[in-house]
Image 1 (spheres, helix red, strand yellow):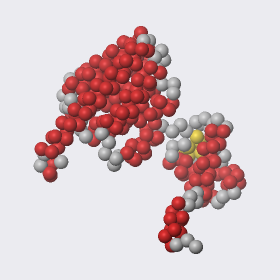
Image 2 (cartoon, rainbow, N blue to C red):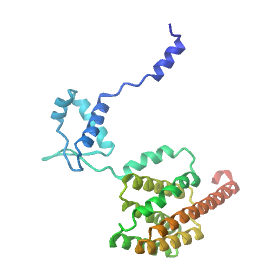
Image 3 (cartoon, rainbow, N blue to C red):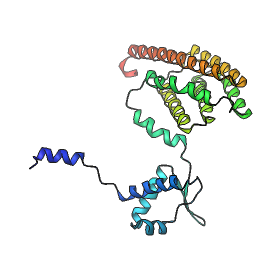
Length: 261
């Protein structure tokens, strides 16, 4: 016979019963994959879903709301209305993960440990795949970052633009997993820079512009080996600057009166 303590442990380890609405959500996700559905495709209507799953109207509506919150469908009203599949945006997928990490006291090392591995791979993956439009946007980005900022807002815009350069490369990446991971790390780094106010670092900006300019030149030559070398070197240099900024912010924080921290 189990003791009360054993019974409690058993209850804690037993798989939690899945909500009926979650069963519908998982079935819809499997249907999307199995049937190779695309954004814009219409889900069966509410009545059809009720008949298909044999659940109540409230359960089906709860499932549809969950799919909408997760960004998988949009609900349209009026003639031609219903539930339509939609592409989940990177921001919609990235934000919950960034929220999860928000209280884990991240620093630059945590992010660059992955960035140093992934960014060179991504950089090489887009060699020969950049269009004239890509080059135009990347060159405009570099020009923006060469301007002399006159206030903190312009400085923040430049720091974010330096990361946006890498996001533009990720948009051209043929591997959706690699693209998402690099864009997620860029967003995470942007949050870290803005929240820690790691903005005023002139040498960091100059180094970023220099590496981005060299990368553009290597991309135009379609020199994959040089692209990999430059991006790997860029990530090591950027991590060093990030570490220096964080050390400076930490020292400054210690010198501030407690009420101003």
